[in-house]
Amino acid sequence: MTHAPIPGYHYDDPARPASPVSTGELEQLAAATLFTDADVAALKVAGEVLADQVEQILDVWYGFVGSHGHLLAYFSTPEGTPIGEYLGAVRRRFGQWITDTCTRPYDARWLAQQEEIALRHTAERKNATDGARSVPHVPLRYLIAFIHPITATMRPFLAAKGHPEAEVEAMHQAWFKAVTLQVALWSRPYANAAW
Amino acid sequence: MTHAPIPGYHYDDPARPASPVSTGELEQLAAATLFTDADVAALKVAGEVLADQVEQILDVWYGFVGSHGHLLAYFSTPEGTPIGEYLGAVRRRFGQWITDTCTRPYDARWLAQQEEIALRHTAERKNATDGARSVPHVPLRYLIAFIHPITATMRPFLAAKGHPEAEVEAMHQAWFKAVTLQVALWSRPYANAAW
Image (cartoon, rainbow over all chains, first blue to last red; front, side):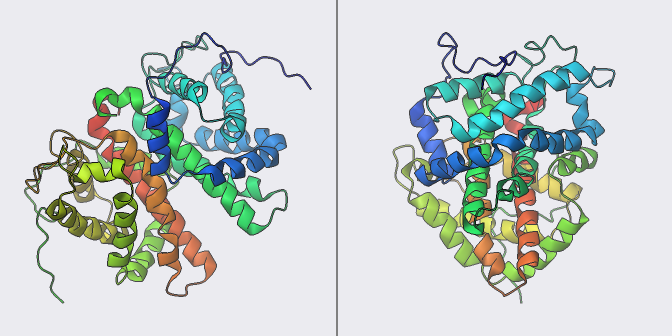
């Protein structure tokens, strides 16, 4: 099965800039979230479990954002009108992010992708990918706050294929760690030297 | 029962500076973590459940930090020698933080306390409270990474008093939200205008 390319998604582009974060720093950061090889294995299973549920997960997340004006604002014009095309363009990459979180090795290429995602939330790069006329940045506090909903809402989807409770819990904890780890990486350009 | 005062703990000092974060901003941030009145109620129960387990929880957390040299470094001299007095002084406030998280109203005074905790991780204020000769700041990435261990390790303590599974889960989710919310607040001085 072939998929149409996703605009603004360049994970495998060998020319993309490296992350300023080293794989050694990543290893230390991952240890601080308790992330281990068992989580890599659990995420692999999660990737299979979630593969045909990505659109439903995005429906939940977009429903959550859409029902809070102060969150929808980051997908809206400075005057407050939601931008449908921008919401849609981000949605395609957000869906791919679910898959990448479960299936990609957490290596230098993955770090480069996290740095790109990080910058796309900041004043340096937000809106540029999609040519959107939206507000200039997503405040750091909301990236961190979203660790909870992006984790909690995932559990029913991980449980949907009838895996034993202990395996669902292992997948959910691995997902929680992976989200926490990525938000920690996405905070880098906000804090710079104090990161 | 009276407790000796905790050095460096000034929660109820009416002279302490207000947080630059408003209660309106807190409300919006709390909504982004899905925090509701039900979580306030669950945390109240958690406060009772955890009251006589605080030292054991701190043993787990200090054991985790102590077993990772790159984390213990933030409680050590720049040359890498752990500072026992500093570890001990922070530990007393950390224990009180567990209680405060469960029992204090999340109001302007609570926000002032979060701002104080935030600054005590940054180059502006780290070490000052305890006169410690330690490294100058805790990198933001580790504050965020710790959302996972500080949440995950709490579950057995919440379950230890025999509450029904659904109630333990409610307490645990409320704790997760409360930790996420506080780390989002602690990130403020790291990001400043982009917070």
